[in-house]
Image 1 (cartoon, rainbow, N blue to C red):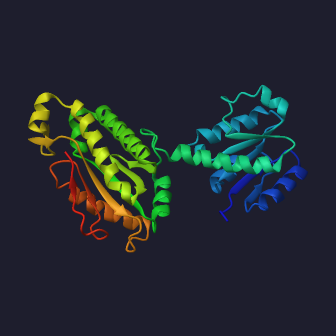
Image 2: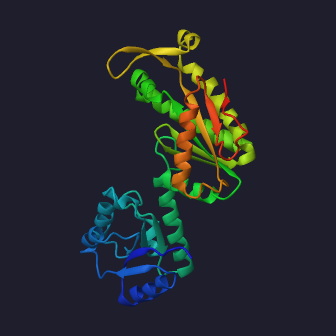
Image 3: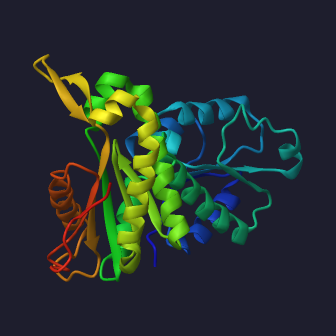
Length: 315
């Protein structure tokens, strides 16, 4: 059974509050019934909930002001607020002015309420977990996906861009962001076209994709092939011919910086020596460090799982 939520509840009447408290507790939720809105902000800061259910049926502007204040706060902006209202109120309600995450008509239909609670929480988690630049799932989703893959014949593949920081320094962050967006699309499309799987963005130039083991190398090759073709358009003919561009190191000295490439570490989820998320990241980092020694884009399969498989260079 999934753990319950901590819910702050404000209902229009004591009888409704008592009834809702009982029904919500029956679903495993911890319910805190507040008598009014005047102390809501103070209670929320002292003991933050996972969800607000607020009766706004009176249409009191002070209530809407409190909701706006909560949603303007960086912490509470990710806490769902479900409003209780009449059907007639909803017809003229200003949704842009009062940022509710969902609503329930009075009288309350409890099956609908339980469904809307689940949907509101899942919606917020998806929106705020996804990377703002690439829109790919972020760290929470990645951790869950990796944990599901452990013990299964799945390949957990970490992707890193070689020489990305100096590229940002020379060409600017806007060009670097475009590289990240392009790589995100390449990984996502390669995984999808191979038959499906999971794609996530850890942050910066670090990505993850998860596919069945038998497809991992094929997908890695496809990603490297497409990335190499697209990245070529970002450099001039001289840089492509030489295989490098001129930049400056931290001492302010000119140096030759290789063109962008990829390092991919492939970890097998059914390796009995890898039992948790942290170990996957540790092994993947070792594999990527080995892959970065190659002069071209490269993927490396965990040799402790498949010792007969060497590292693979892809032009």
